Length: 208
Image 1 (cartoon, rainbow, N blue to C red):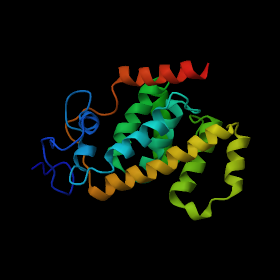
Image 2 (cartoon, rainbow, N blue to C red; image 1 turned 30 degrees about the vertical axis):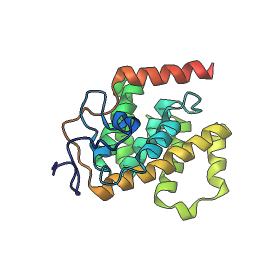
Image 3 (cartoon, rainbow, N blue to C red; image 1 turned 135 degrees about the vertical axis):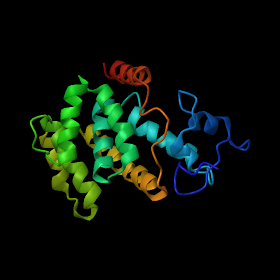
Image 4 (cartoon, helix red, strand yellow; image 1 turned 45 degrees about the vertical axis):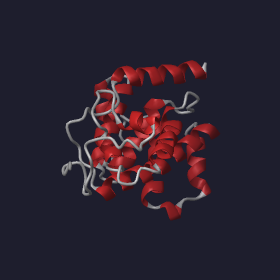
């Protein structure tokens, strides 16, 4: 048993009953067993659908926001939920899609401080962060005015929908991670830069 993965007992080996798609999903690019999915092996039924939805929301070729801004929202949800695991993984993805890691660190630092007025954050991303914070912490208080604020910041209808989808879906991921006590371990943090670049290139090519 792997007792350092999460708060429930997990297996180190893959179940022969898992489909090839699930096995490919559970194994990371470096060959290690993905700790997040390892924690779900006790009941794997939702894993494939959850992973497909995750990839559709963040990695779709026709992403209106692009990976950089999507990872910005995902990381902010993790910060708001104090989800160390998601903060580390998606924060690394954000840094690797930023213009420079230094610029990315300035933005993450502002989010961690709760300083959404920081000059490090562009106006459209600030509006996305304000929307994300309210949806994550006070969902019952959302109004049409919150959508209007995104429009005024220059977001298209498609970008507004993706902002909503990333913020809302990561509410699931951070609650699942925090609720099972999934821990950071020896696995590599974030998606490999080459794979991130491939996603970004596909999204950029589709937007032309």
